[in-house]
Length: 344
Ligand code: P6P
Image (cartoon, rainbow, N blue to C red; front, side, top):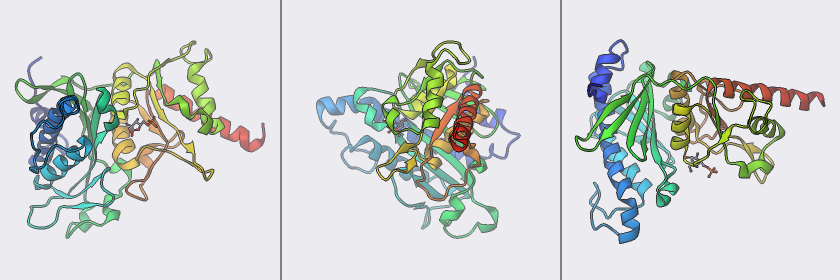
């Protein structure tokens, strides 16, 4: 396959969308540079643990700190200078990160999880950076954007993607014209097209969930999970159970092989139920990607992309993957809930 870079692919294959503009390309390039810097540090993480500090300093001239703080600082530092953002939001920061002041601004809004699953880094498990991009509502394009300009309906995303730092570093993204995967070739420092037009298998063979929460799930959830462990399912045998505990790694494997990732609502000490994953920087971008790859993403019943966030760090139950499996979960949950209501 001829070597195609991300920028080339964007300009060549997506020219029919407004996203193939120079401004979006410079945003993507700053994300790519950030990912290269993060990938380099993630790769050395084990050495930092074994050898103590490497003695190197990071972009801010400070000693290498915790990896997710490092990743967060790299993204904020670089993207502030992209000249195309009016606001950012990070999983690591409680509030909006403004891009005001002397730096040039644009009308894109970036929401990201700088290093998802970073607790896995000490055991050399793949982790990732997740990003979601919106445009500022045109009628408000002046001054610093307010929170309500950022909390847009999730199907308003103009792009979404992730970097996965694993056996190789990959970038998978969509601008609404399919999903495309690029693998970093460290020898040239470029992400090269390796997975054009990715499509998730319609029927999965894998289910991914942390079963230790069984006693914290409601009955509808237990009925759904039991489906994948039974012989009364689409496969006629139990699905394979694969759970890494790193969303990007579990999602990426299921995108390639087919399957469903589930993080259901759990009962809290006060008796209410809530999800763990964050809507704006985890569920919404992954939902955009999976739908563009022919998959589905719900909170068990409702489509994730139909959500409008009420707060920046809102959490949701999350079911994402092969459409047959996500649809089946929805049917089981609706039936289980109606049985509960009618007392069956
Ligand atoms: P648990 C990592 O902390 C994360 O946010 C996701 O990457 C991952 O899917 C999930 O939490 C794992 O959570 O409760 O199973 O450890």
